Image (cartoon, rainbow, N blue to C red):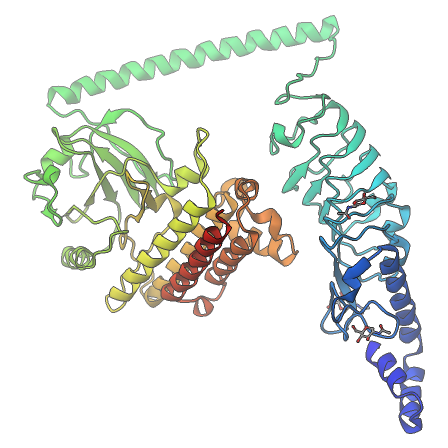
Length: 609
Ligand SMILES: *[C@@H]1O[C@H](CO)[C@@H](O)[C@H](O)[C@H]1NC(C)=O
Ligand SMILES: *[C@@H]1O[C@H](CO)[C@@H](O)[C@H](O)[C@H]1NC(C)=O
Ligand SMILES: *[C@@H]1O[C@H](CO)[C@@H](O)[C@H](O)[C@H]1NC(C)=O
């Protein structure tokens, strides 16, 4: 449709062409008229934005004698099949006028309008709802004022709206009808009144902090902490400085509540009695086993969730063959603590369960006067003794400083144990998602860990390609931190991909897993917590040009280079490609990250005074 108009203008005067065009115009008379309208409306919209000197940008467009799509107007993206405008992105270019929503919304196919970080003024009019299909609206970081139009709730396709950092007033609209809403950011404005309803369970980002809202925070907001509501002195709620004053109860209510309280008390006492009884039984049982000279609690494994550091009680690793202990450890690395240590000693030494997963348990073991060790106990690994031995020795031959060496192993039919030196600074998982105690985990350190891990993994992949031994279970809890806060990969090659036919794929499974680790480093979000599929979530957000929101707030606050964060994000997205064959090899990934790191270091050096 647009093409037609252009050719019509260019060829004006050439009669034969004119006739052909005329025929086309006759064939599509309505489409053309509407299009001209829209182009004029868009030009009007731009004129009121006060584009200033930015207009002199080459290929700026935004004039009636060109086409927004085929002439690639600045900031305009179109649907590639039918050439209609879908996105208008005019961010951070010092626009200083007002937004003519009536005009821009003549383009009814608009899905994304982003005008963030400009100097725009005026209010948001009712006509905003003419952009019927709008999914993403970013108006943050301007000087918009006045009340929000009620018609905003009519944008039923809306997924993300960011109106933060403006001077907006009045009440927030009730967005509970906008069923697909995932982002609502309205912080740093002058909104008043009570908080309306939102579909809090659906929301991913929500912030109304620093306004002048009143009343109580709705009860089901557990997903968003106090930070999302802070800075509203007259707002009250569980996690806010203002607790809500509970409403007066009538005497009937009081009686009912006190009745419930008494009932609760009785139940509590009963539960307490049962626990006490159980504990007594357990102690009896323990005394029984201790008499036999073995203080042990059976590890019943089986839970699929890996829980770290939950159980603090001291006990020892009990052999599945209870008592029928035989054989000795095969030593791989010369570590003093292990020298002379027999399998039996290992089993008897005080141990602490520090992790339990689908495939086995992890214990911290303190042998007599020795340095602390970690014992990985693997269940149900269908591998012959010889094969296991060969595998462990092969892994041991390939040494990389950033891969934790296996110190010793033990193998029987039912039981496989691997011994590592204990790393006192925990794992990357704990560093990212544990209680940080005011610790900061800055961009430089994260990039360093990404780089070290990629290089180590690439090295292992190359060396062990022919043996088809991949890591098999890479995750942030398997990336450990040494006493110098260096990172190293643990548990390499302990997992054989179940289905033999997929074995050649095991390396690309590692690449995917590494991509997810990168996402964790960038977002600070754990994988699969509260049903959040990190890879899926990041991919969807990136599609919506919402990359800024992906990154860990701590990194943004720190002022890490967005360019490099986006660079690392792009590498991560390559790694998590849905088709294994399209993922890069680990060596390619390492090369990309190394050059990203070098770029980062160069920029640091040049910005130093
Ligand atoms: C209109 O925009 C197009 C595309 O940027 C440009 O080539 C053309 O010179 C512009 N025309 C006018 C009259 O400014
Ligand atoms: C253009 O195509 C997109 C899908 O590719 C569709 O959603 C939209 O309605 C189309 N627009 C017009 C005007 O046909
Ligand atoms: C924004 O507009 C105000 C007046 O409305 C002006 O004083 C200020 O300099 C402008 N800022 C920028 C960055 O253009």
